[in-house]
Image 1 (cartoon, one colour):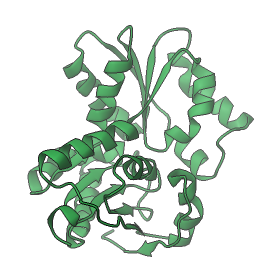
Image 2 (spheres, helix red, strand yellow; image 1 turned 90 degrees about the horizontal axis):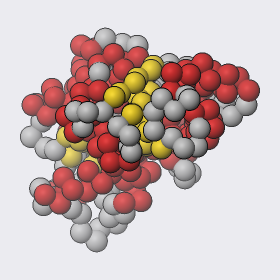
Image 3 (cartoon, helix red, strand yellow; image 1 turned 45 degrees about the vertical axis):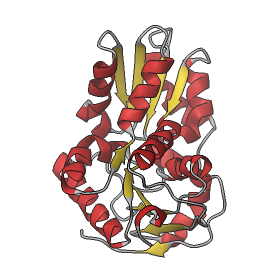
Length: 268
């Protein structure tokens, strides 16, 4: 495929980016998508910046061999560390999840008291702090890393007392009216919306950047004259390790059955 009929490339460190794919499918039903989940090297959150950049470059290079017309970095840690490098190296649009999420948070916040939860890497990068400050210099941003949320979600522990105990520990800095808006700064976290919402209080607005990222992708494709016509959208899913596990767990994130997952091994 060439030009506007080419697929959108989407990647994440694992399965969480499928929440972004779900929203892309909903908002852009004519677009074909190829998704790469780096399940061999997940998680990215505890890894250093140089390592995450190298992994992201590996995946971008693979996606370019698949003739993608744009790349969506559906991983907050990879967006925080690697987005500027990828944009400098690629001659196609590269879209991240942090700027759209920050924009949605600023728009939703009534009192400019915004919380952000994410992996250690995302929080350490201060990418959300900086993005929110550019949009709303008067905002107060409180952040916290929640590293146990990802394995809990991937094991299917979306509710239950152990998950709630961990959520209460992580989210204590955001309770008692300290924030009015909370950014779910990891694409896994929307699957814990119920527990998170009940822990911090229903009056706090939860921001899932997937919707905004899909809307941003639509805008970028439109501005670059890359929108697909009335073509039959096709979806491919690729994992760097254990495609059977991806197949079994991935539909929880995608919200739809997965029929096939390809295996592509990248650098160590």
